[in-house]
Length: 344
Ligand code: TLP
Image (cartoon, helix red, strand yellow):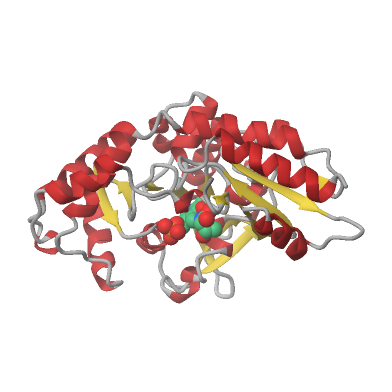
């Protein structure tokens, strides 16, 4: 048995053997000079999958989102975000640090912003207030336990954006999980957004990398911003080669992760201290609230670790994520560990 069954994140996925071989064999060039054929192939594929004109390969989801915010904003402006979203809470404040704009966090229903609430929070430029210029959405929504944002929210948000001349950026780190769970093609989500960032390095198992897609002129500008942020990579084809495998061979298997997350949620939701509705586990992320008379969250995480289960504490709760490198045996091991710790 492995030492640890690692449910902390789908970012822990290791590249497949095929990826390692592809890295060794990748045709490369200097991508900052525009010479890397493998990166170019990946960018063309990413753009076409999302139905956009162009794509940019970036080192991380955080950089993709940072550039996404930067290209649609300027100083004295603000950005409407959902209050638990990753961009606002977990990306080291790049909105203020890089783009010099302020976030305007709004509450939501499991990550889905109410278009009317957004509409009533749009601020026009005035001498004393920031001007709203961008709305950020997230699908699936990490801190809401991998919830899938309804397509209707995208459609309505587009109407609000068009009414006030705003842009929409989608943090689609796990957009393929959303698409598989809802049956809505990724292009459909993307068509209501001006830019989309999605990750290759999470459930899709690439070691590094995310994509930013948009119209060609915006991606040309994004490429300059990436360089300014130190994200221009030279023989990046060795990484892009993995990205190509992520996008051609790794998407469909995400369904298995969803089934495993549901199985795990159904087996632990009624244990003492856990507040979780297993029906709300739509994709590969479980977030439950934990309030136990004798065990704190750090103690629970430690007890799980002693039994070989790694999980993360988040927002007053606990997060478990399924992915390629945890199988049915790991799930059963986790269920047994939870029962031993909490049912006794
Ligand atoms: N999320 C990571 C941690 O930062 C929490 C994880 O383990 O889930 N958007 C979303 C929705 C994300 O979940 C993440 C990573 C990112 C963006 C940032 O991606 P990276 O880690 O590549 O910068």
